[in-house]
Length: 132
Image (cartoon, rainbow, N blue to C red):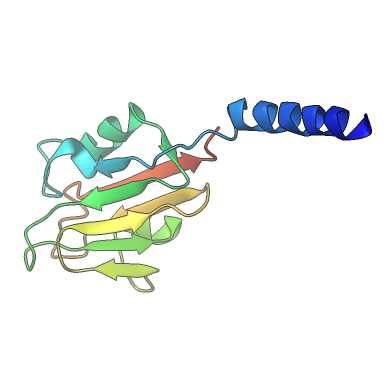
């Protein structure tokens, strides 16, 4: 008699685990930066305004589309972002499309180091969260 009760308990537990919202599969989202090309925007805060209407989660991808050879993407620290310099970038992407996979929640900073593009607004900082 103990075996059927144990089987029922295990089956019930398994069904609860599978139906739990945290167990359900969640797919990553690809965010095309600016919903267009990574290029000199019409306003200096274009990319920041674009990002303010979105939520970025660990597991998502940031997709930078740009004219290869005319633009680049550099992941930099906060100081370099603020100063529009790229003296010690974390990553450099020179070929489009550049895809950055968000591995963990944090704030990330990206600029273009070509000419004065960064000071013209080709920069963005993005906070990301843990997926619920």
